[in-house]
Image 1 (tube, one colour):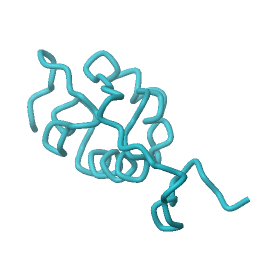
Image 2: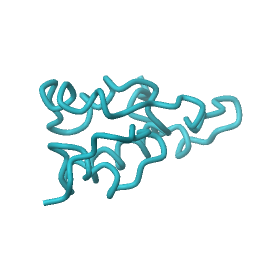
Image 3: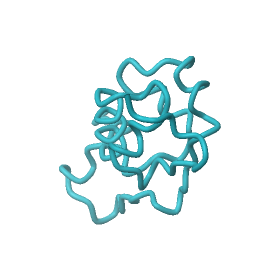
Length: 96
């Protein structure tokens, strides 16, 4: 088992999988899912967005929320005026 991360706060928008795995209750499955969803979003603006990650529970969020942080300045923004359809693929956007 890897040690539980307690002393350092992990920033969600810059963390790698090893940093995420160091959080109690986060294994390789959740680390990959968190990173995959971060890429789709362009970055997290809130800790609560972890609840949108596949099978991520509120209980799990409560367990790690004191050890994570979100730096919204690291979000990759989409310029909707110059983006093509592929660049506009985002979980919060739909064609309708």
